[in-house]
Length: 133
Length: 133
Length: 133
Image (cartoon, rainbow over all chains, first blue to last red; front, side):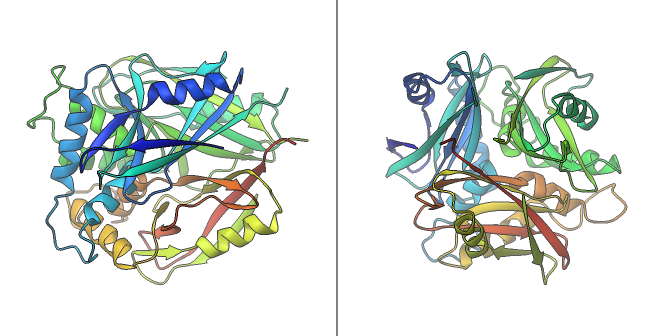
């Protein structure tokens, strides 16, 4: 299992980590297999979506804010309930496939670490399981 | 890795692909293992939900439309931000279990390819990993 | 594949099953590997989120209720469309990692079975795949 350290810089921020994940996959010299991403936090998530136009993730961030407003009748005393809710809506794991030694991503797909309660120092677990020979 | 070609016919449409996935799993002669579904697109998703009564997915489609309206203050110039947002809410992967040579689905469960920006020609990656002997 | 029987007691309820999953993982004597959770139902889900302060899941439950109200213009005759919609928003699978014979959970993370149409007798499939030696 690898750990990627991620430094987020805003309260809410989607960080494009496609290149970092790709490097770890290529470094593992796995011809084909599965790459699991796991976020060990409760106010962050991981998604795969378009990374060509940065306005796409901007729209996802803003619309999540509309759906889960900062102020609400929340109970949790720390005041970060919206971050917990958003993390569960987007999910904390992603399963990527490896083919020909690379991530089998679609043309426009990138991997994003989704910070909802930053800025913080975060980590992402990455586990690569090669196919049986 | 298999690729399933999917032809969607509407802007938004959930296509029941349970039989197609089942056929690929049975064709692989895998007694037990894991079947990964991966959508290599950024405006489509994959879910498992009830496929006995088609009004269930109709309700999911319509309610997503209420939660993520077509018109909003979106930035992304292509005008399909709602499709990107819905894809991230439902997710682009699904992990199914294989037992006794078949998908271990619940009684009412079916697998749906979720189109949010069609009609288009789409593909779905399917990877089957048998358990070690 | 293991099956965990879960007895839910309310219409909507998130049940903390971290200890039960942990016991099954430890009982399997898997040093490292992957633990798949799969909900074979269409009105329930599984998530990983904070289990230190129970008000966090209370806020998730309540906010989902705001986003997907009980009364709506739903078609499905059984009247449980909100439960189906919430199940697809949170997702029916979770992929956990196993390291040093234990679940590699973050400090505050717990696993919750999410009932949206109870009270009922439910089951959860648990599949553990050890890494190749």
